[in-house]
Image (cartoon, rainbow, N blue to C red):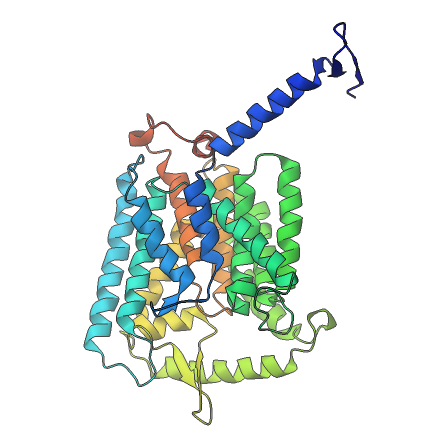
Length: 416
């Protein structure tokens, strides 16, 4: 226990050091911590929380920010070489070329979204993953920036400033309840990787869990819980047991979200759940009408029974299939499942960071069952970028790269 007293010079001390020395140490430590954050990256990612329409641009502000982030990143050098992981972007490029050609050759339905605008957003999201993997954008700053944006959004929501469109559940400038659940579930786990002290991690985890609860998203809550179970159990599991666990989680996610809909803690969801079931019925009918190659980008919507309005799908797997057929859907799921979640791998001395990345992949796969568009969103992109960064920095060709402290931690934690 440190004792406050006076030294021989009459200066106030705390333990063996004067308060001035303690203050200098604290200041130096704070300076070091700040130096590990790129403020432009931090602020730009914080702004991606804002989802209101950007005037004159025909798209939400957060989607515009993806283009801004990519443009800004090109002003910076790329310290990391992708090596063999360049093939992942070649694969994504093939998928994007395929779905663009399909959409171009397919006649759009009356109320489909503009396929080219949607494709441009997918391309920008791919480039965002690339520049983060290359180190042009600082991953820790991105994680902390978006997390700070979520905290500000929550504060403004409870202050009555941010929009309240869903009867009191936390949305704010995220606008959509499902998207709010998705981003809070992802960042409840991802932000832990950017913090060093255990008590910081615990406090942030509790706060993130509370904010996720406030979104009222049963799917996201279940997915986050299953993600942490995956992190705890799978490091010592064989691929066979991991595949079995994944199948069990898939069933459990569906069971909990359907059979606990009337739990008092979630309020009265009878009406909204009945509407969701009807939307699922209409969506499944459209899935059955879709051929092998899909119907093109922007087609993942259905009409209500009276034809008066349209609804987007609530299942991201179905959305991917309707828009791009088997090639597009299987491609996106394969990337998330095999590259991020890795149930077929034998865990050869992986670090806690890589195991957390696998848990994040599991959260994505579970949320995609019930939360509408999940694949190729900003949260999906950051999860994939995190998995790539962990993989890229330990390549031999990057062994001499001068790294930020955060990247050095990711590299040194790898035991293989």
